[in-house]
Length: 84
Image (cartoon, rainbow, N blue to C red; front, side):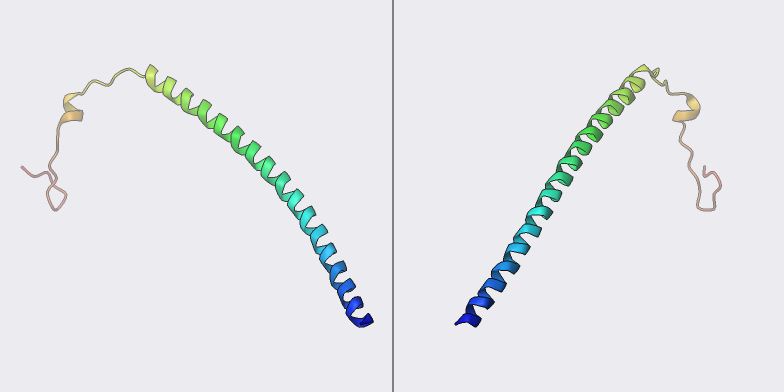
């Protein structure tokens, strides 16, 4: 009976140590998650600002007018020559 109690005490001590380690790990993971979420939110903000800047720059570009050279379609033959 004393051996059974000693085995139980040993298992409870081990369980207690594992619970303590898991709590510490959990706290570290929560901290890492919080940091990662803050970093993600910051990155989303920077991307949003960048998209706005690109949109503003695109809006400032003059509208391109098609030219004869740009709108001409060249038919290339199978050997790389211009087909007629």
